[in-house]
Length: 107
Image (cartoon, rainbow, N blue to C red):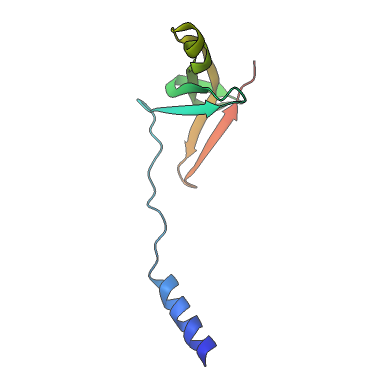
């Protein structure tokens, strides 16, 4: 009897839950910052942003760019050590399936 009551409560709990609300991925002015720590215990900060369009394998993507600053250099020299701006790849949204697709370009 206790098992039946448990399962009934469990079923009611799942009946009233909701999934996350879908939010489309921004196609412009999207920026985010990431801090990575390596073996040196000093962080490297990267800024990722969207910049223009590109075509990869006959499919349109938005360019994903990255720039960064090595904090280890900053600690040693008192000035930041900028890392070059680089093209990471392309990102696009498959609207009907609500998926984000990312393609990495290695140079």
